[in-house]
Image (cartoon, rainbow, N blue to C red; front, side, top):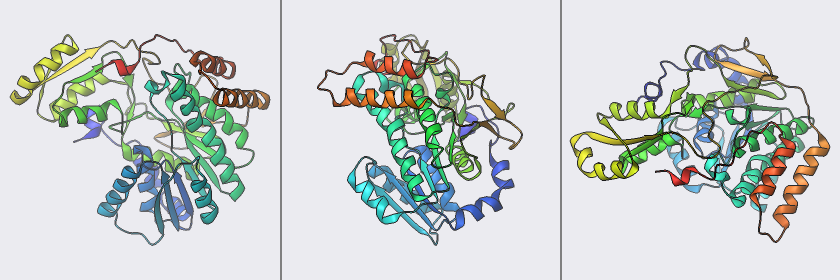
Length: 396
């Protein structure tokens, strides 16, 4: 499957930048001890592969997904083989005493990369997953950044999202809040970040859902009015690695290539995906029609699809990587833009937010989503959140 062709791309975004700095990359990584947190997801596995290629002294990968960690090891052994450094995968929860004990036994690390995240807009539909999202995306980041600072790490890297730029959903808002907290932590340890486009066929994504529907011989469903930028899994790992090694304090790296990177509709990708597998898309008017047609049409080489206008909470019609008041460096790299930041944060406001969230978490309940959203708005007045009462779980 040609991922770039399916998402409407023709060539890699970052290969020239990586090749131009390969000597520097290997010099920085070869003798380094590296910790990757959240390394079992698609981006985490990709950045782990990029570091492994350059044979660091130690590469330790932590994630709560034991099965994905097993696949990560199998994938690396089957393609890259074995390096000379200490490569370990450890299935641990960042909030556990076992994680703390492991870090104490293995520290110090030169680079700490945090790829863990709750990334789905659908996860903001209730107060329970919303609080979990804040725990993972914000407060675990603060904890691990302070851990990196205490060890004297050269760099703490955290993955953000394009949805943090002018956020319209609470997932993107949580990552924008994370960025604000990291402004404060940047006084303790050098911090760099990356804002991402969609990673094509990443775990849990709509495109990954296309492959699952095909395996299960089920109809495809996608919005026809939502446009996104797409990078490949390998490009996601390269962007994280480049930000980790070359990002200055509070730099945010993002994909930037005017000609190659264009907004693409999910419905167009669905059509190209089916055609690349030899199927003719059959556009249906309803979900029921698509489900009914699947058993008889798929064996004939025709695949039912249902396209719809987006009307769920948190969906943004298009993606953007930076806001109008952010200072950009578009000259340093050929395929990477850099948002240049200096520390700017309201210490009292961050403390109030953290305490208010803790008060909710420690209360007997019932927890209120509205109360949490109000706390978001106090810290992010720019958040354009519209509660529509509809979520993606109600879609096929």
